[in-house]
Length: 88
Image 1: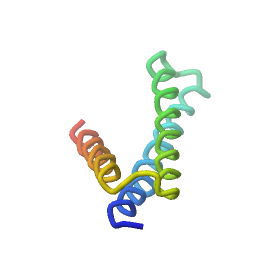
Image 2 (image 1 turned 135 degrees about the vertical axis):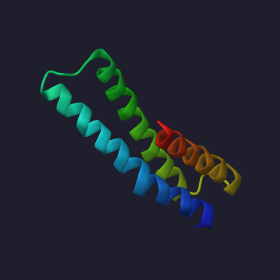
Image 3 (image 1 turned 90 degrees about the horizontal axis):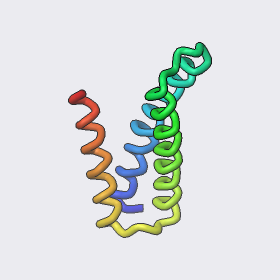
């Protein structure tokens, strides 16, 4: 596995998936306590979809279905998302 593929896989598994799962847990807690707003419900759907996308990216990496340039683009997009989330 190339370095860029490994870096992409690592950032998804170590950073992105745990953060999405933590946020989903918080949202589900609101839902269980009947405190979830319509925006929270939308966020749950969006985050669940995003989690599936991240898991699919891991599968694509493991099956080596993307070339290094595509991996690099996805990796850079994820790093940009992480940076943007830190700014907010």
